[in-house]
Image (cartoon, rainbow, N blue to C red; front, side):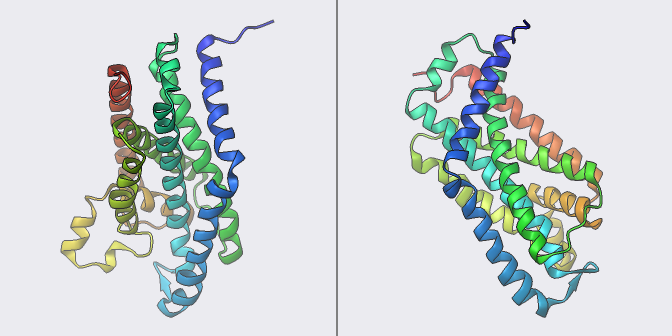
Length: 258
């Protein structure tokens, strides 16, 4: 009988806990973003979209589908990790993992994988709903998978860092409310940056979410304001940077060890 490596057992335990955590309360974790996105499709896609007309050669509702799907993946990947890890800190559960013979990268990978699982679950649910309103066709399966996974991992890592620095439950909502939400809406979900004046086009390039949304739009529709290769390089760079920061903070015990 082949025995599993202790690190693999620890990783599976963390991931299983994280998946069961959001799956048990799917009415609170999976259903709300699906309902919200459905309202976006009805209001922006059907009612307003018919007045706007085509954009980049596509119906407006088809144009906004990639951004709405990715927006759901981003917010849920982030929310799952920030709430779960902070709860473990608050309830002192994380201390058991810290003192256990489990490498920090396994702990990080477990929580991030849980965030990715929720992000993908919600993303799939939103995609199914989008089929009711849009004729969704995938332009590049490889690029679609790469963008979704990298983006989900990136924001799961962001949620992990937010949870490490958070001192109260209120702190875990500051970044999503005042940073993540504005950047998402200004990242080209509902418009092409070519519609903006030259100055604001250049200013938009400082928004990292612009690259993710456009890369995903290219993966699904084949159109983008940004080179998909450039977008993937930027997303990968941010992901690697946040992974290094997360491991460093975890090794220091920042916000965990008293």
